[in-house]
Image (cartoon, rainbow, N blue to C red; front, side, top):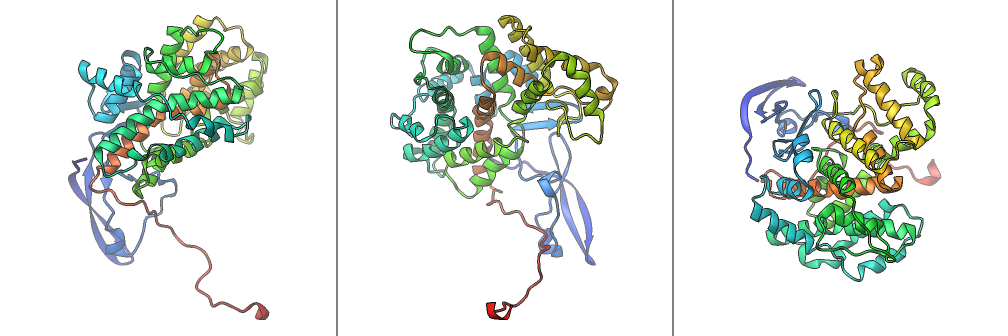
Length: 434
């Protein structure tokens, strides 16, 4: 990746009586950055930024977010345009290559992914090592990490061809691995992929088909799930993406890096948000109990929080939520399940959040986790599969970010610093003198 950093100005900082100057670089969109790489050398001091909320850890051309304006761009394209007009394979190509594919490029990429969807025959036996009640994300972490033990011919990160093969393999095999994790938890036989189906339809069939009869993919449901995948593909330098980059900075093989990303995504504060939103709906239980929970949500002294509303980054309406809301209602209409109590609770909560002055003023709009949880529930997925589907989609973004990092001339092994507040230096005291 060729750096395009453009210096705009210089920042001056005084620390401990020392004056230091640092270049200020401008971005295509978003805030300028102060390059403090020489801070320690010039001043002997570090910055303190828990959570890295004010730190740009890398230069990237993949995704841009403006939380205040509610903007999400993939390679410059608005997320709603891609979700409404494109499909998984085309958007995956865009994230990996930087441009939308020609008809020929898309066909070639589609075929490459399709030809890699089968997994190594011995990998099937790997699942037998897990308990039947194992969480599907635990299985995903283990199986994806084990891919490096099966595909030795694509672990050399210094070989561009091997990097490309590994990238295509992971994107292609993730639906198969995820579907096998689901089938294993249900006790049903694995269903293998079919080359005549598109990416998302193939995944749905692998999840819901049984050997006794063929599974007919509903195009409305497949389209909604495809949108969910597109909307979750990448989201700038979030926790799991940063984990993938940090693991990759050490030279770890790509399968290990993606497994690390899956482990990070598993956290309830990250990938488990849609599952938490659905659990909240179950806690509320019925429409007549909503006022009670709304009152609790407005009470500063009550620890209860409405899950699936508001967002750490988006201080405006989540641009993904707009697309997801429409897809959610299309699924509910197609399945005619609006009479289900849980979905009635969800729809009433949505109405209140969009109309109640308290929620509007605080910009606590329903976010993508709220709508995707409802949609996935309606599609037939159990809640412990929600984060697995998130990981399946985010794999594309992780790979794009990992590839960009590998090709970045400024890339170094990740090594955050700290402010040490422990005991000062002291001498060891023999045990019989303590």
